[in-house]
Image (cartoon, rainbow, N blue to C red; front, top):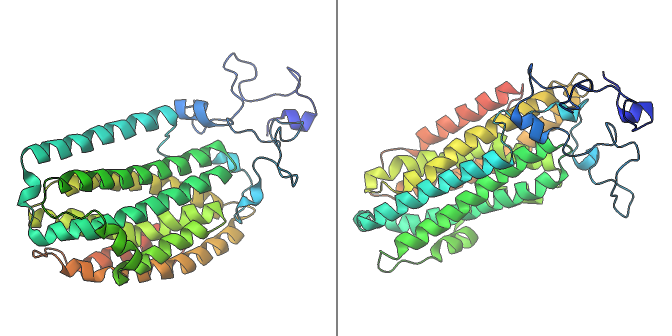
Length: 352
């Protein structure tokens, strides 16, 4: 292990030997590969850590004496929090670029669809479903995005914070996309009611299980529990089931080719977020010192949030019977969801 300024008690030039301390690259970390990626250069050690370089301890502390970031913000433990690298290697610039491309695509789809009069060809029952059910789902996405936005504040390293914050950004973008999409096609459809989604989210029995699951995640005080619950549990059992198993598979059969295009980016978002989450949780579950304790902790989170996600998914079952054309059965979608989460948990050595 290379010496750090903290271990030698000095921050003077030449007092410690770091990775590349003998070169002009000024890099103070060990890259995951042979060479540091642009993502690592822009992310690793951007967030300070007194155990690595801040010999004077935290520059800013709270009134209770705690530093700006503390390991106790999660019950999970790690021998080296700085070892995590997000598989998607997303940092500020690449994130903005990807979000911009998605927004351009979504707006282009909506504009072209409206110019061709496509919303007016939707099945009448499907129009009601979009107003009510898709209108309700945007609140779930917003709630999860808000939860992750709060969670990222407490991540101990910039790499963890980046992965959590980009996840939040994707969720909030989708909630915004759905809101704008429904508002725009609503201008072409007589009798459109933008309030039906909100009413369903607050009052419809079909949605109260989902609302309970989302609000429980929002109320969690452990930031990694929030991150874990969303991507490892809620998304495969509820999120994918509704987006892919309902909207994207049933829309076309009801003369709607627009909604799948608007929603499609969310599925790619989830694959990236899932990969990031699995890598982080796998690192913690296999930690030489804390792995067993972390697995026990994660298993508790699976039990807690899995029960709520199951309740949420089953509560949404009646929605599959609402369209006139029903090419996909809820039972088939549910079976795929259960297979999906079992596969995800298996990668972490966990079970339902």
